[in-house]
Image 1 (cartoon, rainbow, N blue to C red):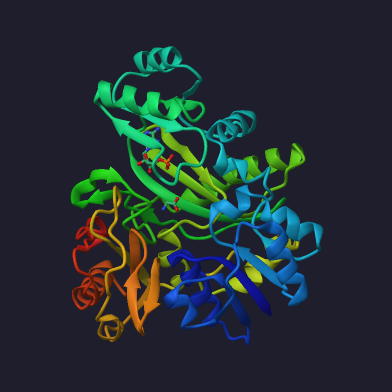
Image 2 (cartoon, rainbow, N blue to C red):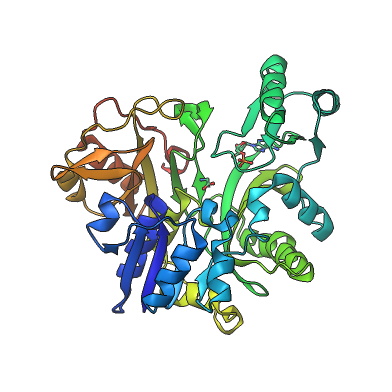
Length: 416
Ligand code: AMP
Ligand code: GLY
């Protein structure tokens, strides 16, 4: 199949690695990709958020499936353009992508579909935000309503900091004040064709920058999958109480959701609650979910894009476990320093079970350099979490990027 993958991060690299591992002769094109991706497949330098340009390229090149990696092209309406031209696209329309693009929209859908979530108040003015914070009490959860590149959410017991965060984001639109939910976080992905859903296996992301869940929120510093501590009926329960009602509600409103429904969940003492939806694969969770997937990814995504998920059975997964650790540039997340050289990748790849998904790299004079905050996702599989962890950290010790940092406690809680 000729497949166009939009995006340039480690998630897209992981998706492409999974497609290449299939027993099929796919022709894969990345737009625009990065240095790691472009070493494996062809690439084209087009703006993934420009629907007209992407669609023209797809039509001219007889692309059979477009996979949209990041949220920005979805919120910009790229899938709508492709759909109108009859190109199969894995990724929701602009309207359905509001599930991620607007936290207020997501809350409204959840309320209408009776999906379990925390209480939230939408504030347009500072006085409304103050009132809601007083009502819910500490710790305070303050969220910018629109896309904020991972910077919109603050969870803090510091009333002054909460107030400042609310005031800052109120200059850009509304904010949500939410009830604080306590428990383990789970990321669970469902493929959706607008009517039917199929689950992938759960993963856990580490959102804070530093060991012990200290420091600021980031896009994600590491992940592991599966989650051995979850009850065996967890996925079925989330499918029935969250994924299906959400997809049905969107379909009933005339905005069917075709693509990846990312359920960000907290398992509280009184049951599972949704803290956020995303409209695309998670990063770095994808890097630990896809290496364990046995069912060919292209079959699943094409079926979702063309209304055919009802004909398929649940995706199968290998027995192995997977861990990923993100290598970040000095200063990430506040002010990442970019342009520094990366070395040792070949030696890192010699470690058994290890692959590397590039997140933000370019080639300069034949060598890799870092071009962003999250630079690489080192992925290791193994028969146990202890084994996968030791492989991932051995590989990381062989990589040099001056000033870089990574968490040392990824998957520690499940490695005996
Ligand atoms: P979000 O962008 O909505 O996923 O929020 C980022 C992170 O903030 C989440 O991964 C949680 O760790 C935390 N968070 C968000 N909402 C809540 C909540 N209602 N209660 C507790 N923690 C939350
Ligand atoms: N890892 C969090 C996300 O992809 O949004």
